[in-house]
Image (cartoon, rainbow, N blue to C red; front, top):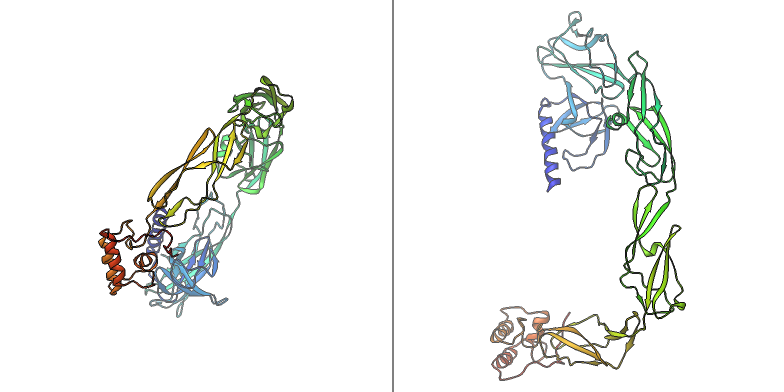
Length: 507
């Protein structure tokens, strides 16, 4: 929904921009003012572009549709549609010329070089003249200028459009230069106060100063860290994307500072040494400090350690990150059995109690299927029963006793399992899914089932799959009035339909 709203807003902006343009007539000229314009084969917003044209390209629109204009470039024959919001109107041949054959730039403006992003166009000195069929050239006024962007340097074109008194539109153009800001260089006056770090410490740019120098006589400018971070003309770039407050990784770092242009830069270096663990403490003890084995190390599940480093960091450490040292074969019954956990050169020691192992209960390995359809064979051969011990050891047992499963009982059944003094339970479920005589599948054989079967027998309804199998009580492959009669007799308890071995379950 959000994407749809954004797309709708985008279309509205394009439509408003297009509405501000003059209505196109065949042969009218426009200039592309966007950085680039997508050219598409059909006039709609979802068609993939076939080409791109750069800013400043002049196109002659011969047809408009859906806020797109059609053109063909004479230079290479490229033909397609471009959105009108990307264009500026610069003239066309429509209307009476009043004897004018063309307009041209008689005298360019006095100022043709501008500094990027700092100066606005100055038309002083610009003279636009018209050529006539039967009289001498003369200056014209009231023309319109279409200016390029002054926010980026480069050679640019200014387009002139003049509408003659008779309605004809003429165009001309002249070039200007948008030059780079006259910067002499960027000098590092002082690196940050801190240039030596321990890995993981955040970068601190306090004390950093750079000086921007110009070639046109303006005063040098000095910038501190906050101004560098907030000014979009500055880019701070290092090998690991270093920036204020970001933790440094181990190693040497070269950080470059760029201003506006790649060639205007300076740099400083930092160094981050390996951090050192200064403290290792227990946060949480293992879930149990009792062990039952003299062949395996104790279970450390639940143990967490707190590691404090010399860079101020404090991290949680888990047993799998550590080296565990112990000799379980030397454990003695009772307390005082030592287990050492080592991490990055430091260690902690835990006391474990060795206890005699004993049986604790039963664990079941259940079959995959414990949901059955009434009448379906109930297969529990995959059931496994294990005798567990306090140490976590377990052994499968075969001579267990299992409670009786009733295959005729619809619903959930709780089945007990016992072995010696231990017991547990599991559950299975039997559903009355399309038993014989129950084509409506409600779990009961009723007069409604007989009525449904009779309607199927005379072709009023169509039964297929399991419902048809349930209606076909005599299993002759057809649903007939005889089947309906059998179901009705079963509904009033005159006959018994369910046979738990003969139900056919269709896929």
